[in-house]
Image (cartoon, rainbow, N blue to C red; front, top):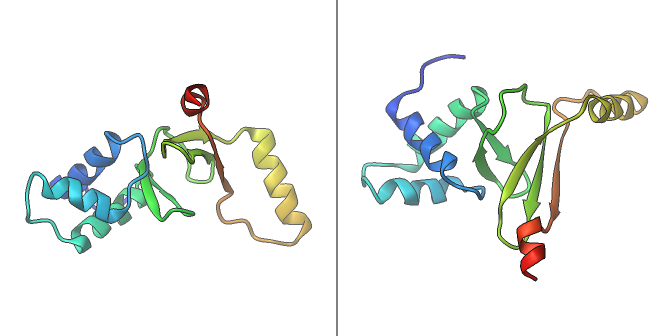
Length: 131
């Protein structure tokens, strides 16, 4: 992993770590501006790129948003449960049987699988209980 966890990178990571919902880069920028107006979009994006590479942050592809990593694991071993009501995101580890299923599916199609992960959309238990 190139570089180190600078103050800017740590500040971006702290914003994400305090959020239960995924945040866009501009959501992060808004949080950072509450403390200091020096922040620029490019600074946030550079920090996010580093944090993703360092496996400290994940990108929710379907929403183009980011969450802090909840597990110490390799990039391809995850899936996300995303609540359509409150926006909460729960990160889950892929089980070996799930990983094997995706590898077999890809191999049958002669597809080179880069990173198998899933995004499940639905309603979390708290929102379901409140309905």
